[in-house]
Image (tube, rainbow, N blue to C red; front, side):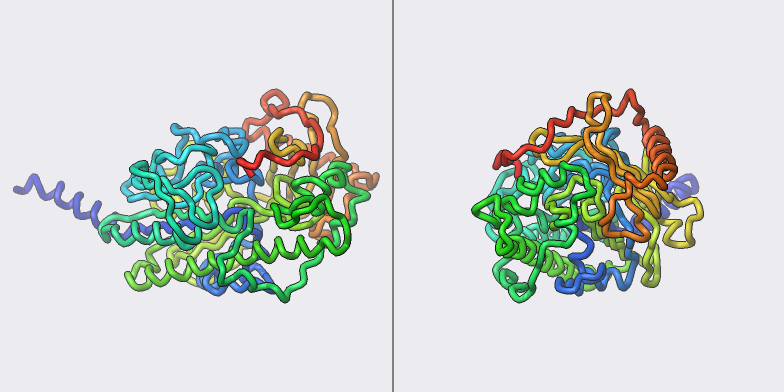
Length: 490
């Protein structure tokens, strides 16, 4: 009997640890701009429930994606790695089954794990993925209404209704089945606010009275690389089809701005439903007395250009394309509201979540946990990081991009892809004095030294992740093209 006591004690401690480890509710939006949320300064989009999370937790004021494209960015969030290492460099590549992910590590350390919603790694694969007890997704982008879902590999079913509501229903059905004796990690991947922006009926006219002009920077392109003017009339330009909000295109007439306005209204409308979803999830957590033992993460996967520099979509290294919102509510991280100004990246998420959950750390990561940064400050936190994107033949509107962003400056260049000199004019921005990136300073001779410093910093940062002149492979930039992308992959 005495010999059993140590075993019983260990089992008791293990059970106690499992019961007190925090749950994780991870809500990921698609193409969400920070300024589409009230807590990030939106003048028109009211998001009281997301704002409340920020007012009770941590709002990261300067969060960025390392590749502004859905699949690569999602893979970086899960793995803590840059795209060239995890291998998901476009929207058509599967997340490697052997690649560790933070939900997978949580699963192996005793968490119940589930994924609901848009996964979007492996365009036509809606089957369950490793690391999740339950996996409910769909092929491709899904639809705002009546999406066909693969319900954990058991059956496919069209579920009638609005995507944001349906995915919340699916997640809550699973959450209600969870045992209080085992921590859980629920991942919700919203379609919203990805194109084609379709609000649910109650929000169709929420912004009818709000005028939305083209941004001023759309018309100040003379000091920018030529590809930006060439993009104006394409799928990713302000005079193009605007994700089908403009039926006759290209159209550069002044009155055609109304199509742009309608597009933005539609985008904003989808965000309102996401806020409703957060309200439902929070209410359930409160009712079940799990709110304060649940890490709630609300974030976007990548940024979005809404007319800045004459562009829509993302992919570029300009601020609206890079910036994402991230709000974390968990009293174990911060007991009072806090705004973190330091530069935080998608590759930091995995390490941070694992530390908060007391799970084993990633064996390899390009990111860094922000737990210390939030709780006590981190004097060794980054002051610079690099961004990369590879030209896509399916979406031939953005060049190869290699860029470095410091706290104060940004340098962007556009490799041709075959080792020859850059294809386009580079860009240099003084972010302190020109946060809107209105003046390209690359040809200012007084700043030649600054450019050299940033080029050296870019090289150093890339080398630290295994990217060198020999290993940094990319497609050849074939230039901006006018044809529309295949309808199946839009």
